[in-house]
Length: 316
Image (cartoon, rainbow, N blue to C red; front, side):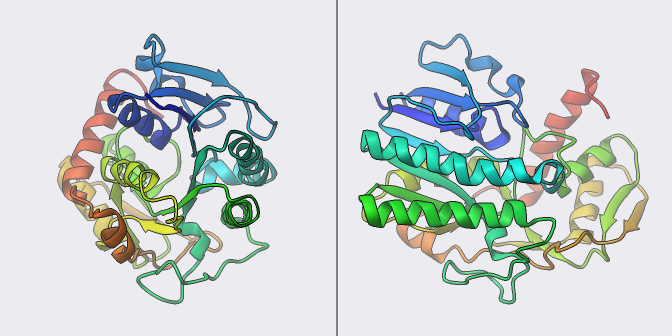
């Protein structure tokens, strides 16, 4: 049985990763400051003898014992990370530094959940791992984009300087149950608005594109990546390469929920990417991984989860 640290364990992805790793027979120590994570995401694990929760902010150093470390700690949606941009940047940089120091002390393998946001508003499509991106370093999204870029720098410098075993994954748009209905990401916005009969809000003209990966597919890839040879560090793109315009997404959500909500348009936020699509050839080659759950099925599962939340009175 491995002893595994998951930072950001109460978040959308952290809680799903915890479920997966526990199902494989591991002992999990989950760390979260509950800034954006939700206790309800891990409430089903609290009494499990193979799970321990530590309330802690990774901006501050921490000591623990572990064989592997997964770092998923950081607000991930623009409204969340822009609410306190300095804290967001500190979480990415100081949080990574503190976990890397522990990995060095323990000689533990460490995983970094990086992001497609490091590509900024890309000039090429699909984005390959060798593409260096187009990021506005002083824009309102830079606290997240540059924080994640800086975290990658720290991971690779620790790898080169201290021979730390690292794994770096660049996660593209992911969705599914346990998303916060109020987190401000496009799928949670559209599904919530459609279920509640509110107008669907599109920012910009709706022709910008995204590629959406269902959470179960993503989690499978993260575990596969952690179990690759120590010589393979990444970075590696993980996402679903099927590309949709925002208008197409809105229409698909309407069809699945069965309500024709009015669509309203608002100005595009600063530095919002026009296109986002992963090249996953490296993941296919190194992990033998390809996403299985396509957008219509994933949206049905997500809408069912949100509908159950709202039926219990959890509405905006």
